[in-house]
Length: 270
Image (cartoon, rainbow, N blue to C red; front, side, top):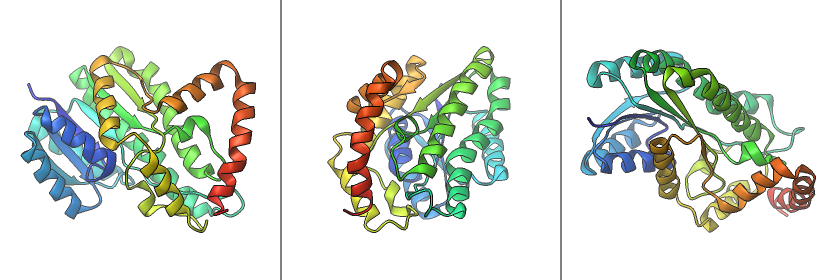
């Protein structure tokens, strides 16, 4: 039986890379996205890659959109095996300059969007007796760099939610996978909200210099789903820093304070 996959924000970036990965395995892949033009193109790409593609309009800020997707997938495919809560946006700025409106915007999409996805599909997974949530967080939720407060908090919230649900839903046959990449080549910065001059160019430069691609992260996610792993930490350097933070927090704090000075200077365009 073909796997049945639903991916929010699936029309571009990591979501699209993961959709095509599963398509090449012959999966049925539904992408939910707010961009219908890109969504239809990606649907065609899924079909061309060997999968069964389906685009459905979906804004993760609306619970009803996700409920409509669930009903459609139950009707078409009899259910869904993997729900990837991937849709996300970015912000940057200091605590005093970031607006409350930007905080509310990013938390509504990055954190509550994942909450809504898990809330809507948990009853279906329980009815099926199985299912996997792939919640896309970020190393930003573990490393917590300065000038990224609202983004860091949104991703840290996804990590906390994922750890909670891993314990809460395990006995129902539901697996949780939490994805925490660092910078990789994607289009996240294109819609970034920030008053910092040149921030998009700085972030894009970091992404372009990364040796990790969206396809690499997609491969890691699919492997983790198959193996039942909780963590997906694709970047080796950041993975080592995370281990250091857990086992020698004083050393981690020293390194991060030193690196934070450079980061603040870069983020401020210096």
